[in-house]
Amino acid sequence: MMRALESFVNIDRRIMYALLCVIIVGLLINPVSQPIASTRAVKGAYDAVEGMPRDKIAIVSVIWSSSTMAENGTQTEALMRHMFQRGVKFALIAWDQQGAKLARDIAWRLSRELKKTYGVDWCDWGYRTPLLDQILPALAKDIPKTIQRDQAGTDVSKLPMMKNVRTIADVGLVAEITPSATVDAWIMFVQGVYHTPIVYAPTLVMVPEGFNYLDARQVVGMLPGLPGAGEYEQMLGSRGFGQKASTALSGAHLLIVVLIILGNVGMLAAARRRRGADRDEAG
Image (cartoon, rainbow, N blue to C red; front, top):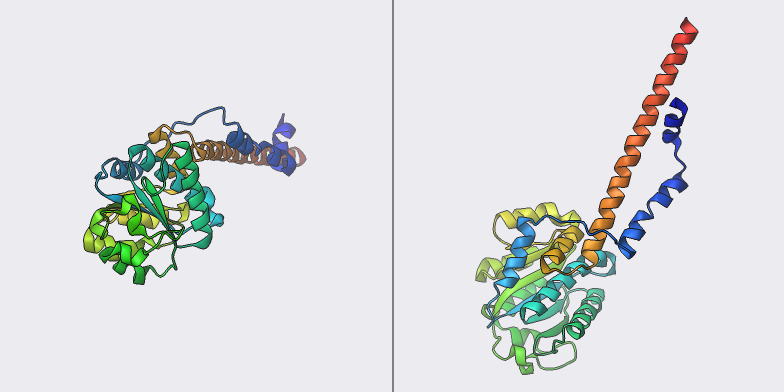
């Protein structure tokens, strides 16, 4: 029995990697849906979209690339899906060249799925050089003059949803989806001056400092990384990648805890056997 327990100390790494395939099973098959508790941060974001005035638009600001698509892309999809379902018109603006294409693809896929019309329900302002401290003050004062044309080259003032949009006063919400600290610029030049509500969707590594903005009420809600996206999906009643990944991650974490416990049990068994052998030699 002791030797069997000791074997846990030297579990073949191939066995551990095979066991970690539970992640793949969770992502691809996902037979079990893990319940996710609602948090204040995500509920604040959800309520902000729910409470959007019908005569205003939202801005979906993305500054992520393929390296953080698992988190930021899932957050982007969850927010866009909610806006489409709620009838909130939004303008997509990208500050990263990769993110511009990736976020646009998400918007087009959702608009086809939910039967929404470009220019009426949403529009794409395209990629902009990430000089937020220079662009945002001008954007707040005159949106058509600052943006001028959408991604396809159409004058934004000619788009039906942009007909009465002139300044930041016509924007009811900004969703900043980013792996970096770019929300600071939106807080400084938009929220701090015009009190426009901001929803912050950072990657998990940026979440700790995000709670400072949330507690200071500089942002009205936050989606903390992939788990935040999964929680948002659950509130929407949409079982997307966020929920599937959360279930898979929970399974992987549980497996790691079990392996740590087994390793410690093996070490204790080996130590106990050595002590017994030493007593036998001494006797």
